Amino acid sequence: MKPSRHIGLMMIISGATFWGLSGPMIQWLFNRTDLSSGDYLVVRLLFAGITILGFLLFTKHNIFEIWKHPKDWIQLCIFAVIGMLAGQYTFIETLDKSNAVTATLFQFLGPIIITIYVAARKKKLPAPMQLLAVVAAVLGTFYLITNGSIENVILSKRAILYGILTAVTFAFYTLHPKSLIKQWGTLQIVGWGMLLGGVILWSLKRQFSFHHVAQTLTISTFSMLIIILLSGTISFLLYIGSLKYLTAIETGLLSSIEPLVTAILSIAWLKESFGAYQLLGGVFIIVAVILLTIPEKEFKPNVARERVF
Image (cartoon, rainbow, N blue to C red; front, side, top):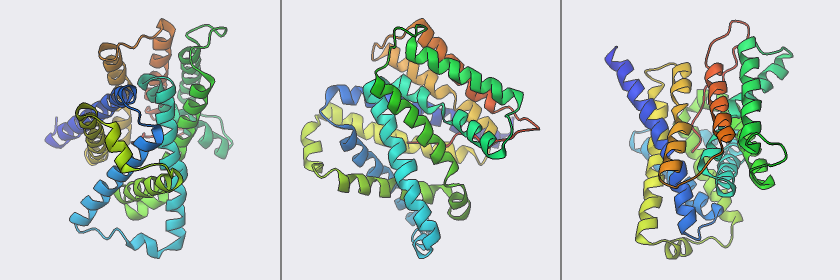
């Protein structure tokens, strides 16, 4: 194995593991504080946005050039609201209304939506492997929501709604900024998207104050918040960095360990319990994403997973 490939493998596995750990940690934080989803997201988006843009400034990148191009900054603002802010909010609400594993699995449905969207635009059925992935994802979602019994839906209506929106906004997050990323780079677009999303949410959430957040936290919960913020940022940087050494297919495949890590930690640490059919549903969804990483000659949608954090 080439040294560079070894580095890439270590980066993507570490990044996926960090992100898989963050879901249960967020759930733990919500269980032990009065923080609302909005409070948490304001802090998270501002922290991550400032950190990434600060890193770019430190490395001598001109992060303000994009604001001289109206067409690009308008698209950036759309991405910040619908892709970044809405994607983050729906994910956190799904987690809050269900659990970390369920939220992560709903997020994993994003590539399936992208596959269906690309097929609709091309007015062409997906290749057999992609069709199999769609069927596996639908079946997995059914088991996840119902635990095998349509008369006994496990998740609340709000959890299901936010979960579906998580998948949809994830797909938008992946597809919309392609031209922006090509022009300005991933870090700059995501950094600005997070900062703008945090500022917009802060302006809408008038009752938010850093003083209230500080009063809500204890030493242990504050420490956990810092760990979550750092792990999310590190996870993203490792994921992006791995693309220098691995193909998008390889990173998409290896990042599928994320829900596995989330499930193991949720069961072992948070004592979450899942029905047998729910676990089977999770397996189906992961398999569906893996199937999408297998190249097909007839149909090649770009569904490599981008990190939402």
